[in-house]
Amino acid sequence: MAAMSPLHTPLRGSRANARGSSGGADSRILTALFLGVAAGALASTVTEWARPSRVGAIGNYGTGTRAAGCPECPRCDGPGAFDAMSGHPPARLSKYATLHDAEHAGDAGSGSSARALSVGGDNAGSMPGVWWTPETAPAATGAEKGDETLRAILRKVAPDGEVLAAVSNKALISEDGDHGMLRTWLDGVRRSKVKNYVVICLDEQVAGTMEKLGVPYWYREKKALADGDETNHGISAQKFHILREFLVLGYSVLLSDVDIVTLANPFDHLYRDSDVEGLSDGYDARSAYGWNDGIDDPSMGWARYAQTMRVFAMNSGLFYLKPSDRTVRFMDGITARLERAKEWDQAVYNEEMFFPSHGDHVNPGVTTRVMKIDVFMNSKTLFVHCRHSRKCMRNLKPAMVHVNYHPDKWERMKAIWAYFVDGKKKALDAFPDGSCENAPNC
Image (cartoon, rainbow, N blue to C red; front, side, top):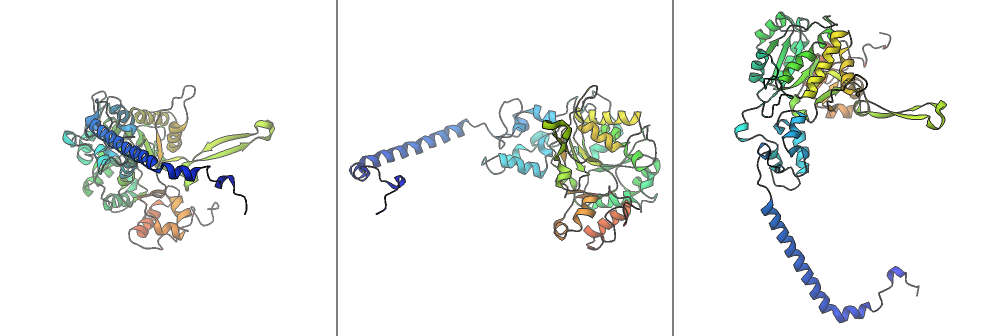
């Protein structure tokens, strides 16, 4: 017989000991089990008795207790956390943020997380402004004069404290309102059942057209900037000082250029956990969300390798801003540079957002989130990387598509509408990947 491994060698006397003391051992085991169950029941009773009553998130302020249903969520610890982020209550968190928060709620009970993130009682009708401060909304608190006309418009069209806004002049829509990129933009917004939107009109003609169409609008004369041209870049440069007016009144604003086709309500797809939430010019996950890029300098010998971090620029034609002192500083910094020099507004937007403080330059300190690239799409993602993949197109349901990579903007906007709205599956086929068939020799 083969020798037993030490792992299989029976304990010396184990059989006899087990036989001789089974009664006493069983008694001790049963006693231990009973005591353990009793201790657990007692601890559960004491914990439940000592648990704070479940009250809404707003009601917890000043009590030192954590909001019910959010036992691990630091955002529920008091007003400071929310004030520092946005100045608005957590009721404006999207379904994605609500689901994420529910994951932290454990088994706190059905619906408890939703209650912690809602605004109830007397506060339900007071949006926006529940947590306004002189820093988050200076005009709303009297610390700074705000535009009264805009305030009246926003009270009507944006009762929940956030609004979709587009900036336009007469070049983007016919005088009768039947043609042009702005008309296609409006058609998409209305079809997607977006109610909280406004068009910022830079001249009287487009304001008159919006009046005829029954579209909410705010007429705002152009600011004298270094780039005063009527080009796309010249018009785009105007938006930053205009957006400031929304922020100081305490409103969040989703800025959209008019070369965007809206296919679903974008507010259903925002996370609202950062100061700036914007579209990337990246065309895949790596380019949009960032990657490490090594540099090799052989002349350095042992230290020849260095690491850099890269990410594609955020697009200045589609982004969501939350009201805070940081976003106001952000808008002011961009406007100040555009007043001094004729620069590309998107380059300035990214530099002010991402370049760290150094020397005399002070970063505004905004937090940033990149929008999901398959929900908020740029036209390179769609026309170059997605439309050639049957799998990608089969499952694709974007909320907004920005025709930013291609000059034939309106034609591609109409083709995007034909594909996603009218169901014409060959509507995108006629367009080249780039701006011409033989790029770069266009």
